[in-house]
Image (cartoon, rainbow, N blue to C red; front, side, top):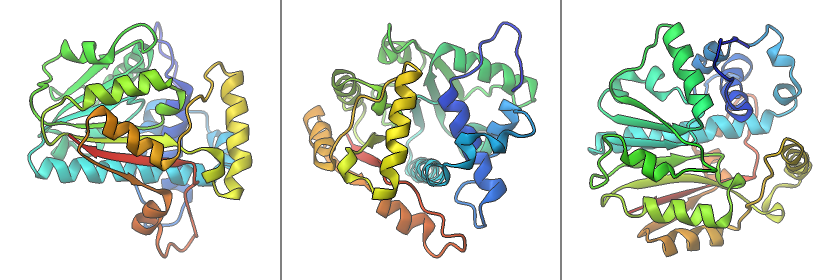
Length: 283
């Protein structure tokens, strides 16, 4: 990986998901669900990066990652056409929407919220590679354990009275119920018409049989790494959380929904893992 003097490397999960997006382009059949190799350029891994165990043996997880990224991209493009001009990415990691879709991004104000080290590393790499940081892209560093992302966002030019699209993927799994309720209740106070797309992880009994062993390994690995997976839900529980937080229009998007939308008739039979579900809610 590219070394950066004085800058800590980004979160391992952010690196892994960015590499999965690139791997999809390089090894899966066309049509590609999402074309994103910019994260790979930022990371600049060793030549044998495709041989990493978390790359070689996680095909269904890779499919899940590109599907959720495409779903969010379709959502923000649709909402921008309808006039929403604020886009908040909670746990942004190495998201590359602003770099890949500048024609659309230039009409938005984009707020990437994540850990300070990850954002500092990303900013440096974007500058080193010549992408730069456009005026419409705002990095909002937050130590989620000690400070409020809502308060940090209020220190920017974000307009809380105007509608926004807020996305949050791969985060709720590591949050307490209290933190999830806080996040939902805050987002529900945004301007009317605001949209939330947030992923949740299903309880084990809702997974396809072939995904259960992988989920168990992931839980053990996360615990060993000091980032335990603590929050799992049923679809009904997710919808109840959103309604109690104050959202009016609430629905869930399942893996089967994403399969029909993005994976139908693929020549390689690529299919996403069954552990994740989207909450799509409107203020």
